[in-house]
Amino acid sequence: MMKIREPAWRVFATEYNASTLELKGEGERAPSYVISPLGAMVNRIFIVGILTDLQNIGTEHEPYWRATVSDGTDRFYIYAGKYAPDATATLARIEPPAFVAVIGKSRTYSPEEGRIYVSIRPERILPVDEQVKDNWILETVRATLKRIEAVEEAREMASPSAEGLIRLGYPAPLAEGVMRALPYYQDVDTNLFRGTVLEALENILPGRATYYPMPQDLPSGPDEIDDDGLDDEDREDLVLNLIERLDTNKKGAPLAQLTREAAELGIGDDEVEEIINSLLDKGLIYEPTIGRMKRI
Image 1 (spheres, rainbow, N blue to C red):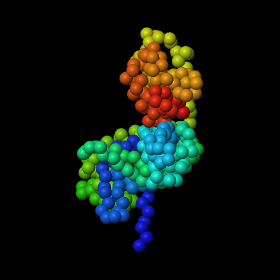
Image 2 (spheres, helix red, strand yellow):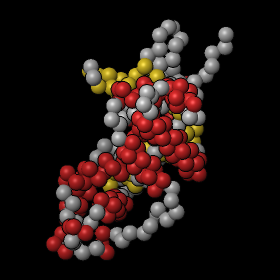
Image 3 (tube, rainbow, N blue to C red):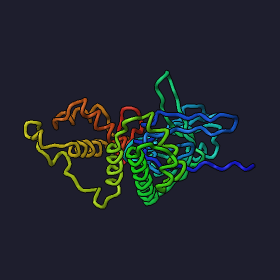
Image 4 (cartoon, rainbow, N blue to C red):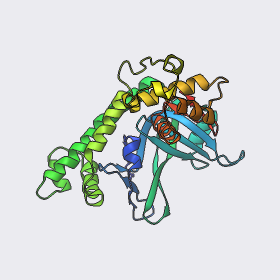
């Protein structure tokens, strides 16, 4: 009997990384799944984003690549070695930052009981353009909203069941996934994932590359900056502009110098670290070498 291939789910990194429920298949060739808080039963996954970091943590003769791909909401973690020859060969040729499409299998790692980290073992990796990335975001927005609706429909049922969701028009794999996710994740905050959808859409709205003044156009000292007037986006823009200005040799802005100059603008060390992590998650910067940040 021919084995039916598992569908490749479209899931944002925020939802995928929040997944801590694993369903292990029984039998030699039975599929295993990572079940997300919204009920995506992920055996295979399809993502598009910006490859921001790439390292060979193996050897020259037997490479083992570790990569991160940002979709604008968070980062996917990808590992490829000898069991993924096509993907491994592609990663050896790509120079970050680059738009890529990845189709692969879900993987989990549990360093200790009660903690699960998810990653992707790629089957194929393809260089793509920004339009492909934007189309993927729109498709993944639709898929995410459908999962949110399914979770909320199930909560409204007197006796939630997969059959009840199927009667409402939801696909069987999603209906089953939601029924497995609900008792495990319990009071999952669907508004959190609506926020993820909005965050993703902001990345493809016209005018997102709005001009912001360079730091030299701003007041020179923290005493002249109204701290209450700078919201999170303002601070991220300031740090982005600093990274671009300090990247004088095109090898990335030195983190130590970035931290010093940010302090002169009233942004403390801890805040700089939070902003950098946020910009990395959104795929707006990457770390070409340790201790340097570069704008994409």
